[in-house]
Amino acid sequence: AKSMGVNRSTLVTALDNLAAAGLLEGRHGGGTYISGSGWHGMAHEAMPNWNEAIEEGWYYPNLPEIQQINQAEFRPGIIRLGTGELSPELMPQDAFNDILYSLSHRSRTLNYLEPQGSLELREALSVHLQTTGIQASPDSILIVSGSLQALHLISVGLLPRGSAVLLEKPSYLYSIHAFQSAGLKMSGIPMDNEGVHIARLEDAAQHVKDQDHISLLYTIPSFHNPTGSVMGDHRREELMTTARTLGISILEDAAYSDLWLDKPPPSSLKARDQEGRVLHMGTLSKAVSPGLRLGWLVGPEPVIRRLADIKMQTDYGTSSLAQEAAALWFAEGHHAGHMERLRPELRKRRDFMLDLLRQYFHDIAEWEIPAGGFYIWLQFTVSPLSIRQLFHTCLEQDILIHPGYLYDRLDASHIRLSYAYASPDEMERGLQCLAEAVHRLMDS
Ligand code: PMP
Image (tube, rainbow, N blue to C red):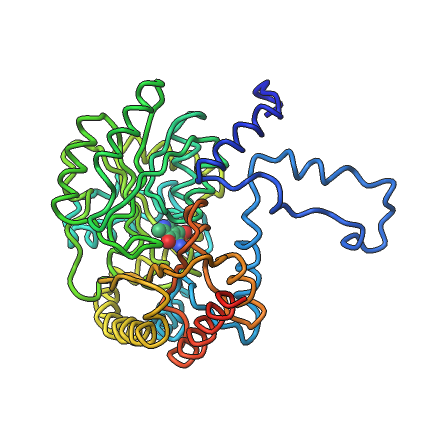
């Protein structure tokens, strides 16, 4: 704020307004403060004012509940009912053991790689993307350290401060943080069963245009996080036409699109893109392994080259080990077979969770049946019910849930459930406890 000559209180007021609009959390309240107890044996008088330094940083802290979730996930015995990751036993451990063994003989693995990422991997991805209808030359692909990094690179590399990002409401929680910390304005567009609401998108885009801001639509069309919904074929066509008419670009997040359970989703927005309007991001995190930290961004070559240059300034490239492993994963044809084995397992878990919901939640909540991905967007129909209180009550009993307000600050009735992580036994115990906690809160 200082370097831009912006008065800090003006900035804080502006942020408070955005918080009121439902997309941001307030700046204060989630921060990490240094107290005497954290400074073993240090002389206090000599300590610089780190608390002020922390407050002045450009990055916003996570909401307290997000920080608590990030810590609690590693607590022994915790039941994770909302975690957006595959259960470790669903990850392809054996294939990676073989891949990593064969990499131990390669010297490239210990070196830096090309700025856009390993050519071998980009070639393999180009072939993989073609199977999904996307024509992407290796030069139009950037390898990133998880697709979240693509969101950050785009936020700081393509959009001047004050630009507007239009995004689904609710949306992936760290996308909100990436845009927010980069100083972008956000406008949440409501969704219906077919995806983002076109008329509301037009209104928001027009408003942004009237103020001369550049705008980008960030969307998760297939197996949306957190709602699990799929944008229909017709809606995708309509969206492409509308984006052309409005002159806005699109960032398509395809993190879950491989994870269809009933039938493949309609073809991606990128596959329909004739004019270089769509940036498309993908990741190995959801279907294969989040720990590899491996994702990709597809877009027009000048965009990819610029973001590769920024990435070089950021981290010199994604881990060579992860890139080489991913190159073999695709080139040796592991991916298709893994997906074929994974789908029936996830289908079983989804159906089991749905059975439990019918058993324990039929009179207190509503939900849609997701056709893929990980999530069930559970809406409680009883009120008043404090989701914040429910989160804390559950956490005391070692049950971790993801409140809906993490994805839309004004949401007061949802939680995100995931059938990908908890074991069937944990799902049963966890959901039963959750239902009991809801009843107790209703009666109190
Ligand atoms: N996009 C969406 C929609 C996600 O849910 C996630 C992970 N939760 C990501 C991107 C980022 O994943 P990663 O950085 O691990 O690729």
